[in-house]
Length: 221
Image 1 (cartoon, one colour):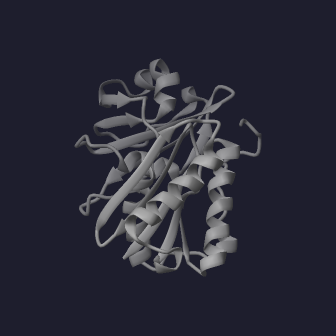
Image 2 (cartoon, rainbow, N blue to C red):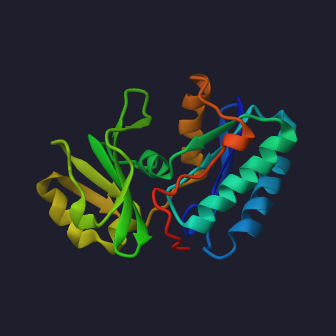
């Protein structure tokens, strides 16, 4: 399988290619240059991998939630590439990608992205037997104080929502929290891992249906 994934949903910008089970990623933390960076990353990855866009089996992208503008950039570029090469698309949750990037062995992962205006985008995930995460809660946007922890068990926290609201979130989880890392962002290499599972299941969409997920309609950047 040959896949290309991209993400511009947060301050981080990344693209990754999987070809013959080898994953190569380009990643940069640069919140104001996503459009230029992501296009260059894609061109460089394809060139270095010796691939044409038409050689790919599918495209994957971080469909949100995240920064309003950033999520639109990823969706728009993915749509354009998919239209041009007639490729199927696999939208992947940025919260799931965050959870997938966890290297800590634990029962549950609470992904949290700073949504600004005193809120976070969040969801809870568990690691399945195949090493891939799946959701155990809805993806929501809310005040950190309003988070409901629906299950007992050990948690790790990931995402910059933890950096901004660590006191509230650590208090909410109490002794269930093993550790958290607030200096983490969704990465395309983790989107690829989740996209492979969806591709095997036949869960793809057409280019015109590769839509962003905002969770709310207020524009916050």
